[in-house]
Length: 375
Image (cartoon, rainbow, N blue to C red):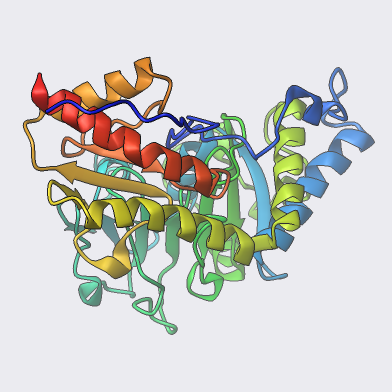
């Protein structure tokens, strides 16, 4: 059955899960105050980097005794920095329920070659048994599975009296979900997700417990320069005051500062979370009214409000056809499921996306599904 094309298209059709839609109203002019052509080591350069750190603390509501650093290589670099610098002192529980979490498992087992590793793996759409986590070990997990759309509902499963560290990849959760820092010792993210920043830079946040581990434990393997957070057994404090390990793009830093100020203007963390919740609700309502569409996350409390993943009761070719049709119509870009995930769609609903654009997209999903199943 064919359908008439909807009359209204999203004003912004960028629904990619990273890099994500820019903040509403963004133009290149937003970066006119960027410190270009200047050293990031200059007093002005350090001041801009320090401002980015201060605004991160304010918007994310990071405790004052936690340290925040801007590091190379996006969230991947930040996670690897944590794994290479902190693991090995004790056993480790590795939790994974989608491709990126599985990547961290592979790195710990195959690259660091740790022997005392417990793997708690769940299929796409589900979480591992969180009650079975051993908090005498270090624990590594993703807060929000970007490629599965499954998140932890909260941090109540994390022991207050844990002996090990909790290392949390929060890249598609930060600024949209309530990260409970008291339960987290390391938090990593990139600003290209919920705040729509540019790629290549990551952020690492350390608790006092993580800092104590860094200063009391030296891993037995060679440490690449970009992962080093200590010198002579002491924390390199400058990393957490705007003195980056390698050269950052001051254009990207400025873009992040602009996005953080926008975040403050929409109500800070609560406002960002509300925007993402409203966006995800639009897609969930559409799924609830379509018998052929299901949220990949099976349990309501664990459904992401950013990377909303859905499957269709249709042959594998159908979602692929839909993605191509919507791209050609300029109604939606980059909404195919991740290559390792079950066939379906992945629609980014983070705070920089306007709810009205998602509302405009839903009739286009109906049209594309009708076209794809008719051919």
